[in-house]
Image (cartoon, rainbow, N blue to C red; front, side, top):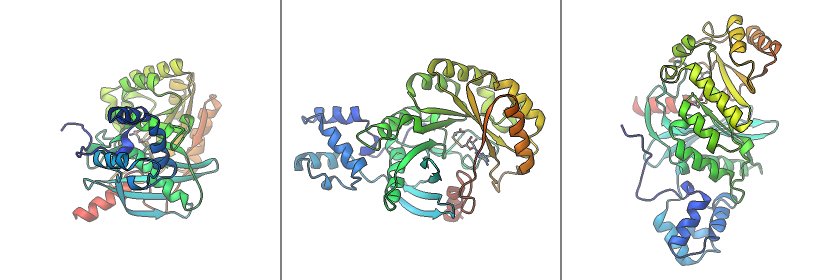
Length: 356
Ligand code: SAH
């Protein structure tokens, strides 16, 4: 199956980077500076039609609507958790469903976006991969998730301050669209989300880590590590066969040296598999000398998967071992556990209901 994005005759206006918007304007004989006005309408005023862009000529508005789509997705449903977490289920124009989440933190509102319809990485603990990969999202379909979440936050006068690319899909398998997405939401005439407030997480597509070191700018990089040795990692994440731990860490070291930026390692604690004190020691041996941070994720229960939760005291024991070895560690706070919990679960539920 070709890994192309969904293409209708009309591309989404949200897929255009500021430079591409300027190029298009020049191509049709208009002024490049209007890109700024269009960005303002789309991402600051957040209009839903080209008609509303009243400081543009009628002729330009018409050309825009003849060339581009402005409706990316519709909301099927959203669930709001007691802690304020909002989980959206959106329907794309070709009928596929994706998830987007708003999470509340002391430092602001962060949005978790999806980059692919499904996933083909096959991690043994993850719900997103259960139905395989359907297609990549366009850059504009990723941008539109942030916009939809921002519109929801507009109701309370709040703003999207952070974005994590940790929803469904492997972002580094949709690399060009990911990079365009980052440029678009980062642009200060638009959503203006600071690069240091954006984090991209990968299961470890090694060549793309090298490329991200060149093209990722100040955007944060997180790596789903989940195991302290290659044997265990292969068991949890089959991608470790193609991109083994040793090569992954080599790429991480390169990234750190090249960018001077700290890497965040995500380490899911999957009961009875990788959560014992000896695993913590082994992990410390592996990454202890790197400029990094470890984010421990207590397993999110997935009905189709049989991992169990690590007891609380053992989670803290694991954390303490790493800290004693001088490693910076956090435990991921659970959010929205009263609504469909882990990534991909709401979508999986929806698929079951509509198919079954
Ligand atoms: N595909 C990318 C983006 C997903 S980010 C990646 O693999 O990094 C979501 C994070 O949650 C990843 O670290 C993923 O491995 C982790 N995750 C997935 N399912 C989980 C589960 N059931 N419990 C805990 N963490 C899980």
